[in-house]
Image (cartoon, rainbow, N blue to C red; front, side, top):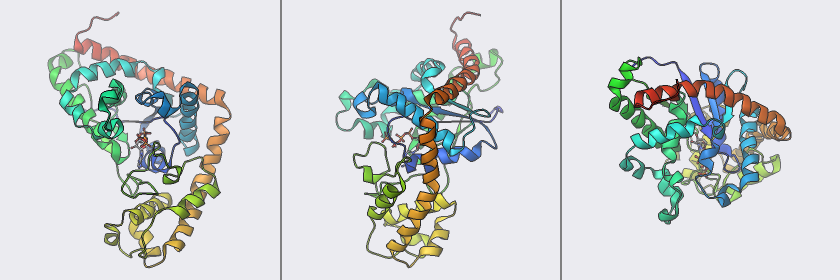
Length: 350
Ligand code: AQP
């Protein structure tokens, strides 16, 4: 495989309250990557509208949520001057390349996507075409920057594999043209997922077998990044557990999804391993562990939520960050899209 400039891309949908899963599985992990890579962090608003407006709240709510996700990026420590922060719909090359990706991906590949099955539910005939082709838009998001690394939660692993399949098939189908256009053996890199750590799949506080999700009807199932200290404490106190004390070793968490989840959350918030957490709390009652978890969560999330609120109160500043980011994103995406057109055989204005 040819050498590609290393670049990180990841996105978050503005579809509702950002929660601890989005934070630990994605946003918090975006921050340290800034030291090693050029990073592009995107509010993927075109993905948001794959569900009906009743789900994401309509036009005014979408605007508010785009700004809120941007505020979460900034409050978490993403630097929009050194890196790129923008919303997807401002860079039309995403949609343009998505069409090419639609023509490369096979229907059989999309039929295997579990997220579509979960989100479409029983009424599949009534799901939008956009929801079905969500993974090809995600492939375009990544490929239009020829990104090499993608930090995501475990739930997005299958979509990332599809992105690699699209890249590989494009490279194969157009191999001669890619070489003739001067790009050597491969035009698109096969992006590596960055999925590791104790919190790649944060589960619901009400049911340790379901992932924590914005769309769960129960607000007690998740900790929102804008929850205040009392709400965080109340939700953790109410979190489902089992009657046994915490085990002293990690294998004792097997078959205990709620205990495993809370230990994983503690480990991720504190930046230690599950083993370290069990060394400290193993053999003890949940009430003691939960009290420590409340202190830790309030300590970590309190300042983040406060900074998000401060930033959201200045929409002009957020909008300026997004349009500056979009200009810099387009400066990368446009030449890639032009090269894709040349490789594909479209005639374009010189
Ligand atoms: N529970 C989770 N644990 C770890 N990581 C998670 N992510 C989402 N939920 C968890 C990661 O957050 C990033 C942004 O997610 P998204 O908003 O773009 O999409 P999503 O996965 O659809 O988020 P939700 O909350 O689950 O929304 P709904 O309810 O609409 O489906 C991604 O990197 C994702 O892996």
